Image (cartoon, rainbow, N blue to C red; front, side):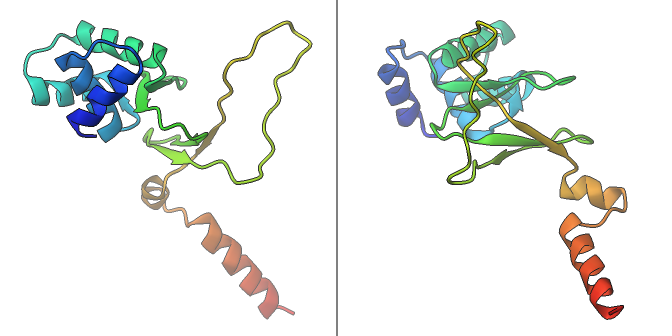
Length: 159
């Protein structure tokens, strides 16, 4: 994301445009699913000295304004991504922690919030878990699709 786009988004959210906000918003869009440590490095590359607390404060402001999304996963530091306006989900590698976006299939049923507990539900997240291709290879596991194809090929040969 170029700085002019970041400035436009900040103004559109009625936020004051500051160098740290522009740098953090740009970094969140350029390196989605990054933790604060990674974003801090990117921001410092852009603008020089900035405190860790300032980056945390900017991230909270961006999330509260709907310009960024915080991804909370078990046993992992919070990750952040730019708010894209789509309704995507995530797939996470259990071994290395890599996160990738998963589009919601067109026409897929939307999850309905339960009404019987008195909660006002404002957000639903679905996270898929598994092994990424790199970790499957390291562990000597084959691609599930190729396993499926070989099983059916073997099945047909035995008929």
